[in-house]
Image 1: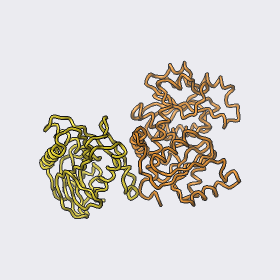
Image 2: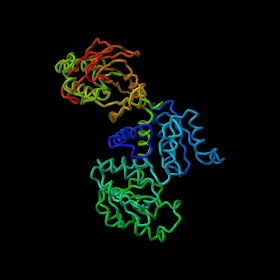
Image 3: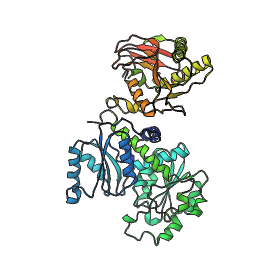
Image 4: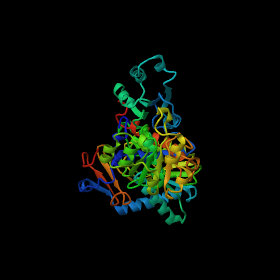
Length: 310
Length: 200
């Protein structure tokens, strides 16, 4: 494994290896000396062309706790804002001798393109509306920690599916792990062309959240991405909250053992109510905590082995 | 790093199980462990403050057996755990990515304890070096000792075991295969000639 660009690159065994290593990494996170010497002398650039709090800080912490040198760059304040092309920028950084670039970019496919331009390992930390593999892995980790094996478990992914990169990665990851998946969204936010995909990959779609909730083991609420919307996807925020939000009333329809995930940042009162976000079933903070451990595991699997420095 | 550890537990194909020569039988392994248990107690003047930490995979099973043996002798429970050293190895980049095993320390920790590291084969000494580094991230034991089932020589670092089940002179090309019932199908130590089945 050299890059992590898409969940489609990982088979079930590789996913399980990353999740199992993350269990050990989680233990490091809770001990007094949060430092492993494993990636000493390795250099990781976190290149974030888009805003991010948790992904960037958790990749940075993951690198530091494994003794790699990490540097954060943003689109603003770099030569990108002076008009340099993406290709020139990343080739410049690559020429300095870095081992890995963690890329967040607003254009779908940017990390895959960068992987062809440079010689270092590339991790996709979210590209446009395409994929966000490390998020899918940490979601799977968090659900497994609470529910056990995900084989045969029913997971509903609800909300703004059209603009979501978390959706595609999670769908691929959950299917590889054997979970049953139902996608729920208003017709305007259900990706066009989902029909043939759901037939080949074996997942269900629905417009009715209330029908799906009673049978789920986990419900994943996706953020309504207002910054990617030109408007017109739903009449009002209030109507969306009532029909597709995880309201206090819907919380009661969930089976007792079911868990609630949200990749964050949350729009409280829109896709998820305050009660649901803070409920005992909510794994939102567990997800953040797992984020660092899972990213340490990703760095380990990409950078620690044979041939990783060629 | 001891080549025996690289062997996947389920390579118990008949070819590799029957090749080579048995150097320790099940009874001899049991006897050696009983003696090591006595030695540990003698050096420590009793079981007080002892913590046994096995290095995965087979060291963990050996640590548990030693804890049972010590309990039989002294009637005193000695905590036995595991210490994974993968993240501290100096040869990670020379091999495919290794899977990490869990580290389980006793709840009371290792601060001020006498830690006995337990492993199946002592070879280059690099695993032990990694284990010493790993230990220092968990606390400061009063003393660290080393118990191994087999010492096959060829040290690359200044490391010496305090308790040895059997000193086994080997050629570097030979391979020592340790099997334990907890991990494999039986208790047995074999020495395989160069180029034997399963050699990496």
